[in-house]
Amino acid sequence: MMSIEDRSAIVAYHKRGMPIPVIAKTLKLHREQVHRVINRYQETGEVKDRHRSGRSRTARTPALREKVRHKIQRDPQRSIRKANLLGFWDKEVWPSNSPDLNPLDFAVWSIMEQKACAVRHKSIDSLKRALEKAWDEITPEMIASILHSFRKRLNACIAAGGSHFECE
Image (cartoon, rainbow, N blue to C red; front, side):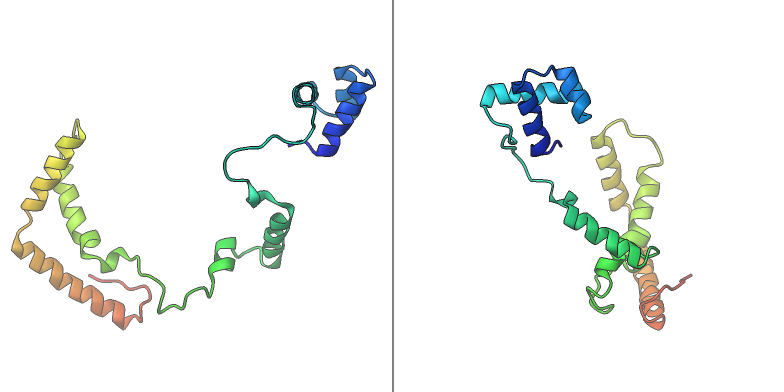
């Protein structure tokens, strides 16, 4: 985006009768940029920005860029995400997102995927029907086995103090 000073200089040179290519060369700008500023000035009589709809792009302010640069220079090995979030929540409060502790993720979805996706589906409806059929085919014995395995996983997680664990 061009500064208001550059736009004012373009208009001043234009008022003195300087041609667009010469203005562009003098200010080291592209001719099209100069042409656009002159046209806008002739339409509105102003050089300031027009009102824009939508959210302003505040993430690119010089102050914010400097803040990010400073954080990176402090410790270039640490990501900005870690620098901002470290200590935000205690380890005990951090929400779990482990597929190892979700019976649907570690067992049920893989069973359904294996059954429903054994063949290619030509439509979403076909896939939905196959998933519903796979869901209906899960027996109470399978659920009991999954829950037994889930208890083992919970105990392994507790034994590891919530850290990484391996479970057979």
